[in-house]
Length: 305
Image (cartoon, rainbow, N blue to C red; front, side, top):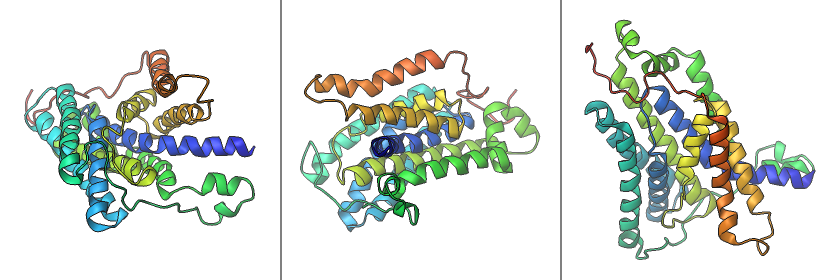
């Protein structure tokens, strides 16, 4: 039982950045804007989170700077795709390339090392009150950082927001039937801008978890494809927060299993491939017939026919 609980706790840790990034992707795409730039937004959040912690000595300041950086980079995608009607796949790809090249350039300029930053103040373990004291299961499962439990909580809140609030229904309508929404007197473009900015904020949190929650430092390209795994979780979950969280947990479980396999029996590079191969296989098998919001990816012009 204890081994299973520890495996679940490890899966939660692996899945946490995927959950935050997937929630950002859901908000963005439910509003009608494709965002394949989740990887770049996470990488930017990871870098600026460490930069903020390095400059101030506070992990919370690093988290704040990561969120701001994610929002600013996501805003570039929003302006390009919403204001100027750029192809959203290309714009998202540009975000990924800009983040990869930008962080690779800034890393030696700011920290003096092309490979990694120095260690900074990160987030320590914050056990869940009361639940942490449960014998056997408590310390292993509930002795996690607050990040780990904030992810599922955000999924619940965003799921409630999309279904139970007027603003959430309007956001969904902007990705399903923007003309109908406009006819009802609601401005579509501000909703889309807000959704893209929110995706940047959540991806910033995801990146900050990687650099401040797990490692307390930044290394080049440390996201290592996690943004694309989050995008796969969005698709597998049918653009629904709780289902996408479940998909992220599956990918997290694959990652947790890898580190428990005998390292000397199989080549390390092959072991590292397993979570990504699992993502591809699951996506191929279960994504057939899955369709996103009706108007996602389509530029919108108010008043145009």
